[in-house]
Image (cartoon, rainbow, N blue to C red; front, side, top):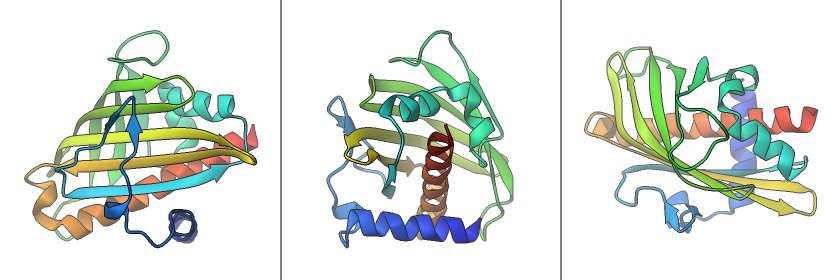
Length: 192
């Protein structure tokens, strides 16, 4: 797993070029992006060789996330119907012990704030675990058809008193998580 994450990280650096994430334009969905005041921010991207409709369907079928994402242990919709603005969902993800927090499972309650079908999605919400709290998470995804498939970009910010006690550590864990998510999404979409 570590090798896969590192390979994915190298790919994201290659795709994004040598410009640091903080210097890149922020991703947006319907004109709204991540939290510009947040101290913890990570952005990455990956090329997925699959149809846009496949990539979108996998990513927006929240209830099925645990079937293809190693880091998601449960996911439930808190409303019915297709994912849309104001849709809510709750999901869990284990977090290993760090020098400043115990091993725990984060319970994340997300609300879709912006969505444009087959183009982008932005959700926000807190993440709470025993000994760990992210007060404000903001996550933006964009999906761009390209010659060989779909370029998927994602950017996330975290804010809150506790999570900001060690910004480099928090940014590192956020980055590993997003890289793994993209890798798992690529694997799932290209297998269909």
